[in-house]
Length: 389
Image (tube, rainbow, N blue to C red; front, top):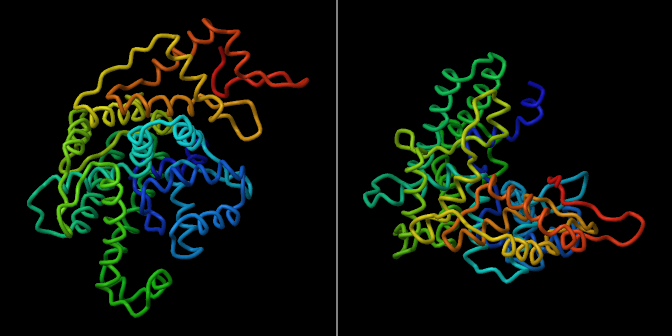
């Protein structure tokens, strides 16, 4: 119960994977540049990173730059420790694959994986709506309708599957709050009567304009992401078509049973499943990598690497995933960087296979691993975080 309370924000995020209404959502490849900016200036204050963004990116003022930072955190590339921003494990992975001259497809694969983990239900359902050629209702209304239906499905699921009343009450409260916020955002009457919402929007806007603006901010950035990553293409004006890669991505999730009613719903992570006291299920991290791999070549095949190939990859990636001023790297950074490059070739490496490979590599090449992570001075060396050979 204590763990659930401490991890409540994470549970809330997985109940409906949707990054909220904020500036800075546009241009998914901007976040590949963002991790490079932060890596180059080391752990930095928001003020310092904001200055770099204003200098290097075409953004509309400091407030928008702060929005870019917020989205970078929401996507899981940055985290805040005290008053400093630092790269997360995924952020180091994204930085590393750029430094090793990986293909744009590999970079896009890692960006998409981050989107799926933090915004998967919003982005995938938008893609699924666009796959329907006969769209008579606005995209914003259709997408918000699906997001609300997901929250309703989650409520029914919680009542049926969570035995602990305390845990169930927490989950139902989170779902109720999410539904209230989303419903309020598109409620014309609320927009008319609640002046507190005007701080985000021009007070001269009518309620209809405010709702339309919310729909626009909900659809346009994600549609931009899907276009940047090659899953949709723009025919003309507002006419978008899902590409073959986009259809493969959708099919991969649907074949794995991620379609509930009319909406696509992703499973919980292993950590959240445990917090909720549920039976273990497949790791959605693996599921997402398989789906991304399928989107490139039409089918995903397990990666079969020799220990020599695996060690050469670690050797190439290790200098770029080491923590700032430390000779230590997180196992998750290496895994994400490796998975992204394999996905672009239509292959996937599940987490358990990766762990087995890592253990075998330490056993096969102990001297090489030692030299690679050697640290001068009396402190010796620091092993890879997250792994004990």
